[in-house]
Amino acid sequence: APPERLLVLTNRNFLPLVMEQLPEVPPINVVGEPLRRDTAAAITLASLICRERFGDPLMLVLTADHLIEPLELFHKTALSALKAAKDDEVLYTFGIRPTYAATGYGYLELGKMVLEDGGIGHYEVMTFKEKPDRETAEEYLRSGRFLWNSGMFAWRTTVILEEIERCLPGHLQALEQAMKYYGREGWEGELEEAFSSIDPISIDYGVMERAEKVRCVAASFRWSDVGGWLALKEYMEEDGEGNLYRGKLLTLDASGNLVFCEDEEEQVALIGVKGLVVVRAGGRTLIVPQERTEEVKRLLQERGRKSLTKAGD
Image (tube, rainbow, N blue to C red; front, top):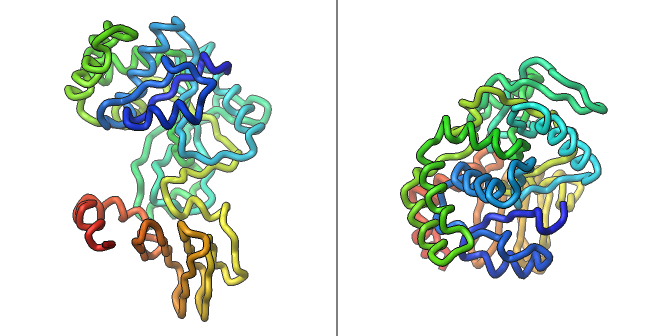
């Protein structure tokens, strides 16, 4: 898509950084969210802006922190989903074939195949599954009926707005009111007021799980959500003992660990340990078993970021 058709939503505090990194994107296309209200609010706002400026365009919703390779296969898959979404009143999501029993991703349970397009399967989505425990994730992997929920979507603007109106009418009403000021004086204040009135909920839980017609394309490109340390496995060096690392690593009888140093000149030594994630960044150290990395969020919630900062000082 040409730059004028790219719409970027980000935290309001990141606007200067985003515009610096994407100078070809018109400033009006970079929108700052005043508060964190999860993906349903962001996608509702983006859809309303698309309707205001472009009518009823096809939308491809992507997340900034994903690593995807090869891009040619991603383009082919995205075009297949967009082509189908153009002709049908359907919401499309992208499912990724799991390579391990991940507990940090949601899952899609596949129904019947409805279309095969150049080797890309289109399936009905039976259910959306929340992030599972280890045992359940292993069952999903063995069954072959589940894909990772990538959080990427394709649809026509009017189709997603109709579902938002049905499933989350409060989101639509609040943001339609703010849109009366889009591109005018008072826009930022009205947008903040609208976001303040909205309860945070993801597009998956708020809309996709309740939508009447949802399909997925089964993607075969390599995909990582780099929100988790284990997602970086394929992008780090290996020492021959199954230890993945960035920085300088010294080991004795240690295997299957992941070590990340923000400063690549920093050294970490491991003796007699297996299956750990060790992170050194900002003068702080995180050590956690690989199967419990998703609990870092829980640690921050329960102990608080302030406590973690003090512990590292």
